[in-house]
Image (tube, helix red, strand yellow):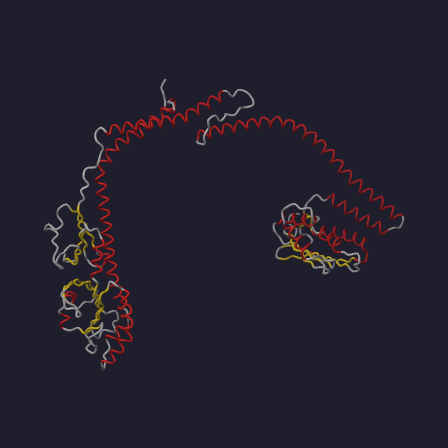
Length: 585
């Protein structure tokens, strides 16, 4: 017999999973991890240094872009072009325009940009005053290194140079942004441009903020050193092939074309950290640690395996012992748990309870069926009796009416005839929906009976367009409203109780209005009635109105049902009935 995986006990399966899926892979991976540990450290170290280089590049870009922003702000300033391209008859006129249109904006704007050390305008206009932030382009200015490098520029440049500004005679390193003022072609009488000097201390701060072990060098497009974190001659050439950066150091480079718009290069030199040999336990420690881990893992596998197999064996044995009725539940001895095995045991207990309940229900159902047969027979007998009782009532009413006719009591005979017809119609209506005309005919019979009771003190009018008489309405839906008016609106001292019933089509609905001039109601009572009939809870009060409201809601949804009344001013009830003429009949 060939053994399959399903024939192996669960405990051994778990042990095989542990050996083949955990212990052996971990042993192999352990060697790979140790061999690659130093590589990971090196990659992490380089990643950190790359992040330092990225931050330095972004900060240099921010400083240069701030200067570019200042130049761009004035590049499109039409007032600035007008100042530099106007011929002034005297110094006073230039000073006035300079103070009004330029000094008030430039001098107040520049202090917000801490990375800009100076800002200067240059022009060939001979009528301007050579002072403040404006300079006339002289031969001396044309001899400056930054002017020589830029030439008669037609676009913006960023230029590192060594020399002295007009305000400072020291020959130091400068980094200047030079931008021509040629945006408006109509202002081309003189050659004009702007120059903003970047504050070198801002660039130097970037180099000092990084790791003290790092050496940063900023080169221009000609491989000249602009700045360096170690002492180097400014604008000296950096020899990238002659031994610079050799030794146990990593060399990282960043092209700053994206950040500063020119081919500057940022070079970082970082020492190679000697991580040394990875600290490993001594030779005898490794087997000991492996043995301890193996024993702990084996005990854990045994403990988990026992948790599964013990409960599964209990469930299996218990199912085999189920031979009779009722089915017994598996007792919780020591806890069945809430895991999958515990859930299986709980499901078995629920199944046992359900089977026992079904068995009980089958027995009870047989008894119930017998009782239902008896009840059905009684119901059939009661139905036959209910058919006889109304017929008996109609015969009595007809006998009394005939007696009244023989005695000459014509009015009494007419009322008895109306009453008999009303009862007969209530018992014989088979459909819930009837035409509006038939409902109004029944309503008028009811009002004639009330007229017999109240005499000339009751008068009524029914207003209905003939085209609406085919509108399907629930039977006995209007009569309870009229009945409430006659019962509660009529007062004993009333001499002229008027009842108006109006039926009209409004926005696709049949609007029914029942209005009287009776006693009326207080506002609190109206609110109580409205809340009661709008509620879906069963209540014993206002049964007639609640019945009408519930039937309309069940058939047509939440439609209009409004009660308006005031003490001594009568009552008006308005409701909507859905459907259309002739539909649903």
